[in-house]
Image (cartoon, rainbow, N blue to C red; front, side, top):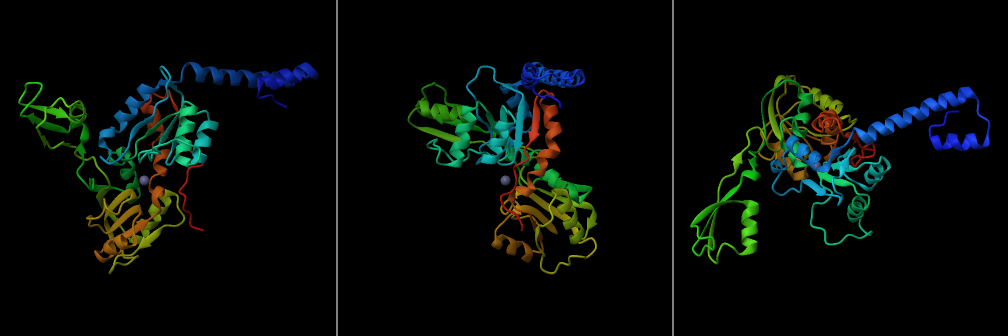
Length: 362
Ligand SMILES: [Zn+2]
């Protein structure tokens, strides 16, 4: 018998005779455990601020949709909070929260933001409130990248294009602007600062309005933010080697690890026609509006409404629906190693094993 816990071996030694061979094996196991523990405690950790900075370099929060709630959502009140282990999950459900705590995670990277709509209270009655309370009580930091991961090059939407092989003309469905570059020309007839007009960032302007430092009459002109070429939600692309719809469906199922998908055949299209898919559009999650104006032979997204599907098939666009998070979750295992490199391999990243789409085909 091996004693993986040193305490168990000591208890046994105190009460029973132990064979030398048994002791040797146990000693090795104990030493290995201590070595692993020490290595974890002394060399593998990163300051939370540094983790956030690096994650933001990988996918800047300013690339996310303006409506989104991304970045560091819960910051534990600890000086120099050290992060050793991150649980990466698509959705921070209560089972995923249990998993994070049982693994001893210091931080949770939840693709969907667990805090989205404003919360007015934190009680034990609502699951989302319980999750926030458990993060705070256990000193666990919470970060959500959401649409910043959809927008970047090499992000979720480009991962969704992998099953279609070599591609040309890959581009986002919408032009994205860098919200951090957004400036406002602010001029005031009774300007307390004595200047006639000045350029302000969004936060600076909000602060000035709050402080009432701009005078009573103020004119604000919004400047165009900096466009971000190649960055934005969804992707369209042309296939170098066109596929039949059936071949495309099989490749998508294999890439996403799904035995079933929902499919709507475009009016006039043929499932088996050779080379029927020359162009595609993809959007992680709910792609109805992002893909709304896309004209392609096939689109892939997680979910959309009945009426949106009817609009597409009448425009000659076939549709694959996989259920919302099945277009997102697989990216986490795909990107885990790269994310660890982004964090200088100082932080262990574990992809959740309990996270799954709530809908199943049975
Ligand atoms: Zn989503």
